[in-house]
Length: 398
Ligand SMILES: Cc1cc2nc3c(=O)[nH]c(=O)nc-3n(C[C@H](O)[C@H](O)[C@H](O)COP(=O)(O)OP(=O)(O)OC[C@H]3O[C@@H](n4cnc5c(N)ncnc54)[C@H](O)[C@@H]3O)c2cc1C
Image (cartoon, rainbow, N blue to C red; front, top):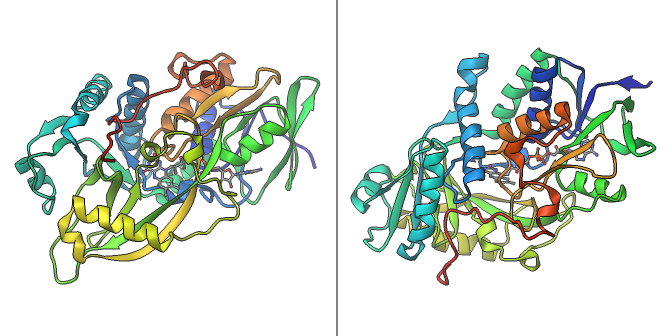
């Protein structure tokens, strides 16, 4: 049976879901979201859910700040509980990185998210157990949060459905249908859907489908590894803040009182496409290699000496949809009318998703690129307009 919709969203991750919600809110039209598995089953359910605005690029800081505000006010505005952990973000860096950190503080401040340099005593009060060190630069962004990804997704989903978005899980889009040089629908495992506007919010899978239509995007799969560590037994030590250590290239956030999620700052580890560990996103080893766990533990002890006695609780691996500058591509196909895409989130899409959702909805409704996503187009790589947004510049010690 053929169904119709004004807007068809392919992909039920956090970015597709928020785009569907904003489209519905903006238009009241018929919005259908098609997800091949269950909602969040792609990268979204694996996210650490860290949201902060301390980055060097003003446009990105603004986007992160808007998204932070959206998440923080969500429960109050929509009567749906979001699991927001308001613990703040503590960045540890080498004094050589001072200049880029100043730029990041300025960009975040301009975007409405203040971050301050603090001394080692204040840092130790915020997070007991830090390595005591006068050679470290500490910056604290008190407004940063982390979210539990799946309960967050479910809360947004309930709101979207209440507003009228039709969500179909277990519904794989196999073909994008064209009529001349315009899209006219999709063929899926749940039948055919007709519609004049389609958003591909389906990560690397979407990039692959787009390439079959002649839309080639520099979105690469890159396998990354992370681990949950448990604090030593018989200790009161606990991780209280989101920590990001620019020297060891690790980031951590609390996982309850006894554990912490520890991942690597992948976009800072990767200098070029050749550093990426290409993997099939549907077929890859789901746990971290032993050598990686040892390496992560060694680095963790540098940031938090009490964790020397801590132990690995479990590990996992994931595949990120990387772009050369680790920022997403938010665009429309130049040769196919009605075909839009938001892909390539490079391990940072959760914290951008409300901004992305709003921008893509406006893009599709007005059929004109909104100013806030200027620069996030697909031509930027060829034209040398890539973003340099990380809050620290590389050092040789990294
Ligand atoms: C370990 C880890 C930690 C992370 N930590 C953070 C963090 O702290 N902060 C942050 O901002 N971001 C973080 N991220 C990144 C973030 O999770 C992703 O960038 C974000 O979830 C991407 O959302 P998405 O909607 O674009 O993609 P996805 O969640 O991957 O959704 C795409 C969906 O499309 C579906 N799909 C694919 N093909 C089809 C098809 N043909 N038909 C129908 N559906 C299809 C897939 O099943 C999938 O559900 C992390 C990611 C990982 C893996």
